[in-house]
Image (cartoon, rainbow, N blue to C red):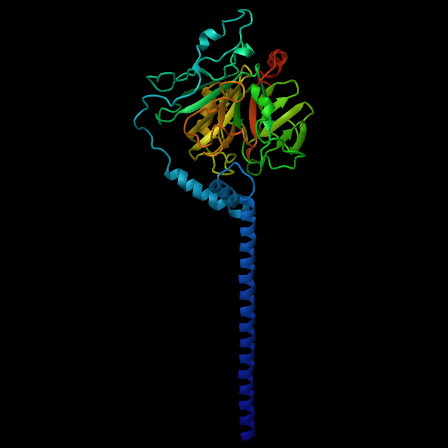
Length: 422
């Protein structure tokens, strides 16, 4: 019995010893796993920090705060950034009603009597100039909806203005909201698309000047922003007849054709652009089509890549009217539906949303050759009026005067290509 008990004790002791050994091994393994996890997390943070610092040290036209937010969005934190922006814009959204404005924000340029302008020349073929935009709030304020000429060059002997701008209160429910609208006379201008330092995010043989070239500023009359980042819109881009990002069928597209005409269309082709497309820039579906609002504006998911369609922020858009001229509009505190309403009211038969948020919309006019007196279409816009006169991070459009020969060619082809072409 004694020997049995002793063996049992030894056995029990052995088991205890075994348990202690196993427990010790688990503890050591746990310490090792914990160290590996902490080391991995530290290395990941260091890699992220190096990536962030490297990115922030690159040349840029964007403030550090905005670049930091964009870096977070591009590096796995898009959901968090979008949620914070959504909460912020929702909390700062304006209330309906309030005291109406007593005067419109100042705009550059001289008032144009558009009713008489078209009759200055041949009555057989008068040039089209848009009528004033009809005010939506009464009584109308001084100059509301009345077009202003922004460019003056006595040496150019211009028959008609290449660009006109105006502003009006776009929503009776928000009587302090003001939209800036521009009309671009496609018979008198040549519009170029320039890549920026970062956008479009495609592999180009050269990104070019990333600003308005110095040798082109003698004819510069206006510049305006392009669309979303390609990674956000999912759209394509064509530059110099080459498709650098696959085009998406049905997406809203700003197009320049080889014959010098322009259009805003729902892309009807495949992923590679036809040979007659000089450039094309896509950005989500059309917001106006066939002279009607897109029925999905209020609840469709197509505009939800970043902030969505219902958040009230700075928005911009470009469209084409039934005469083949371009219309640009921008305003603060807009949903995708309300910017579409602005485009429709201004005469667009097709329109596409461009970039949004305070940092990106810009429509800049110049008073004389040499990019003199740059001015944003509305005061209080975030970007300086000198934007695009130095290298910029985003792609943009520049509007130039045509040569006399080019003006005639544009006028003759526009009727074939600009009126309602799909």
